[in-house]
Image 1 (tube, rainbow, N blue to C red):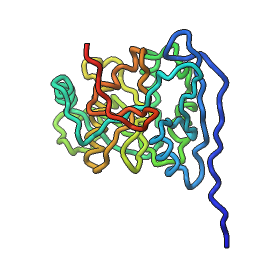
Image 2 (image 1 turned 180 degrees about the horizontal axis):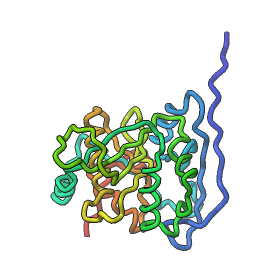
Image 3 (image 1 turned 30 degrees about the vertical axis):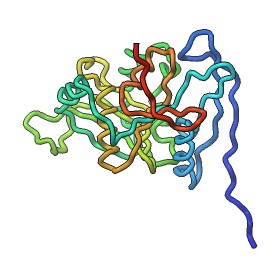
Image 4 (image 1 turned 135 degrees about the vertical axis):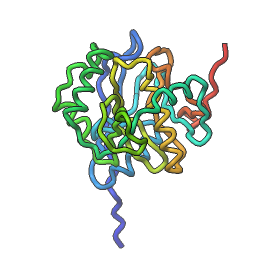
Length: 252
């Protein structure tokens, strides 16, 4: 009888490096490669276990003295937008979203560079080239899609496929239990549109339409102001040592 099992993924640990979110902290990550025919299945399992995907790598924090990074997922079916979120949805009612295969374009990269040059001038992605961007999008062995958000051409119907101005992009993994927002960027000149919030709201709506329960947002970092937005969407669950638990915001 053949008792050979499918090879398990190999996990590795990075060396300590400066934490990009919290001062005076060092970060370490445990990671594995997402390749081969089992990559989509492994991506689902690892994401549900608190990992994030970057290209063909799945990783999660493994810091020695800090547990500030917490995996967050929105419960799509129970979500109710706030008044301000409803205003954001109305403001962006003139946008048309189109789902594409994970293929980069010059137009996407141009918008990506504008976003980085305005929002992340000193981050680890600040010097990314067109080739780097193409690798970020294409280097995937899982079910990844690019969602483009464009302005509807004047006079066009809501279902019109005419290509308007590209103003936002989301790189998204389609999983068995929901959508995982890998990376998103937008036109930094359109602050009044709150495009980052709008894309999350759109992903919640898409997840509901698919009949799936979760939108994965990655890590909320307790103590990092730039990660605070991830706790605005309720109900949501946080991954704790006891498993996924409903998050209750602290009241002042």
